[in-house]
Image (cartoon, rainbow, N blue to C red; front, side, top):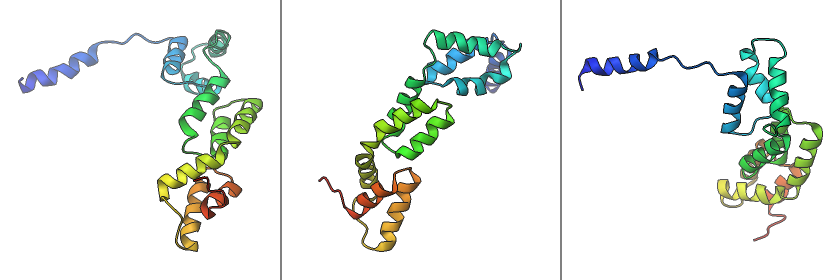
Length: 165
């Protein structure tokens, strides 16, 4: 392939005009990639709204048809993040996504029962075992705290207070 034909290719592709997607089309594209809350879609699509109220109508329609679901968003976040993060960090993420207080509370409540087990697994993957000194234990505790695990759970995991091996 000659140099001139390589240079022509991208230009030929760039000349093709893509059809402009509607708000609904853009929303469906986002939803096909992962679950989005209504607030997330509003943030992403606001700049593409051409007439006032158009975005709200599109989102209302998608929500009525079941394309937007707070429960599915919460479930998606938990499935992707729970193995690496504590309940506090997951709670923050759910709130940032604009989920209602009841959905966040229900999700957090369901995670509390497994927090010690999840913290222990994250700790084992990262450190492999107990620290030899107080400085090492402090480092391990900071690591788990940064991931949103509860202080009592962190203390039990790092000091070996609830070993289930």
